[in-house]
Length: 74
Image 1 (spheres, rainbow, N blue to C red):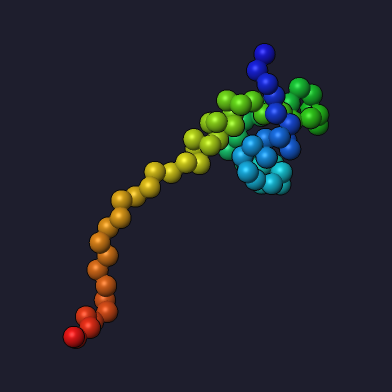
Image 2 (tube, rainbow, N blue to C red):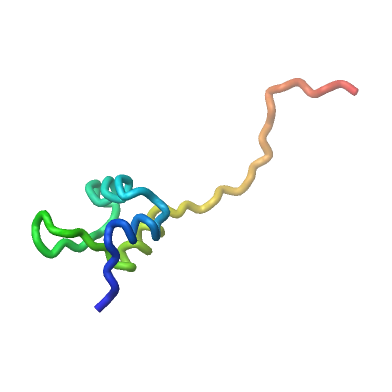
């Protein structure tokens, strides 16, 4: 069986607070395991990796920005 992470362990693993983790869980952004209603909540490593993948964004290439400022005269 796969290791299950507690809320505190999952929050530490993701580098966020438990409150932020609970918000992500409540909005459905991260999957969780709960054996009985109102019982302890656990997270699988697969769910944590999936959440990281969802939150990872590809960096955009730098574009040469045109400025609206006047060029300095030398």
